[in-house]
Image (cartoon, rainbow, N blue to C red; front, side, top):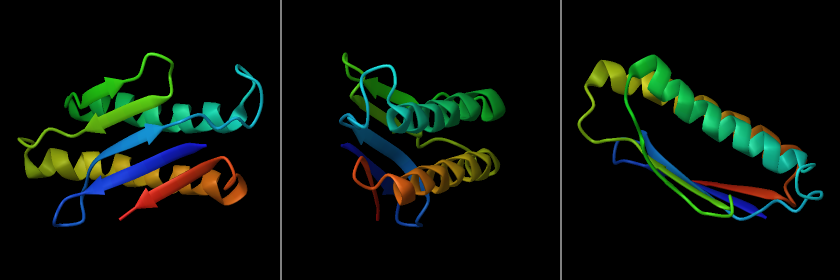
Length: 110
């Protein structure tokens, strides 16, 4: 199962997320839950960098079963709002995947 934890600051702004595990929906290379979650998360990271110029701090596992993304603390308020829209869009997309595939992906959004 893929477990996604969304971390938020005191103002409820997303300041990072962690994805770990494997969906095991299908065989490696044909797992649409894994492909969807990966596309949404990496697409969001790429969009953050491309649109805002901010490079999130990333940590990845060697087997593809782990991704940690943190937004730097020293981002101006305008840029942070751009990043928030992208991150909140990612959360909605991941929760949409969870609606249909809850046996394979769980989202923890405190």
